Length: 252
Image (cartoon, rainbow, N blue to C red; front, side, top):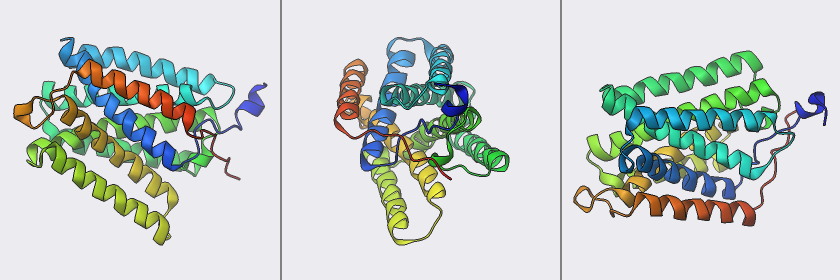
């Protein structure tokens, strides 16, 4: 396949219910997997972030060079983004010490800046416009910021705000429901709603992941991080095979 043709292919999936189910599982896996490496393996946030960043950059390069949409390549890149997002957010908020509020604010600014620069450069930020290497680069950079923001936001809501993991999950679920209602009953930009939902699924996954592996005394189930990560990985693989996975339709 020549490069001219490849640059006009959309290599990200169409947005379906199945997409959101896998996305939430992937973000939950990012939390348990990131914690498994940084905490259970005692590698720390900085070293873990370095490891996951290398994996993420490699996955993005592979994804951009791929001749067509491949579900496993795409979701492997998403998982890489959410694991690096977990350890990077923990490093910023805990090791550097800017706190959940500071980390969430900084990452929110970076996320909005990424979307704004992308829009000013290419004129669109919707999924159907992701059909050139430049658009894919913006897409994955924005995703990394959203995954990192989601971790900090989830920790802030569950811990600092005192809502706990279940309470925080309920809050983010309600916010996602409001996005769904806006999608069906209003004319709000679909691109804005997509990125809103994409961002909100990350803190939801983060608090669910924490609920699974944090100590009982802290309101968690204290499950093995390795076991939880392995089970989530298997579930995601099964759903990728079972649920329809097709590329989004290119914007004209």
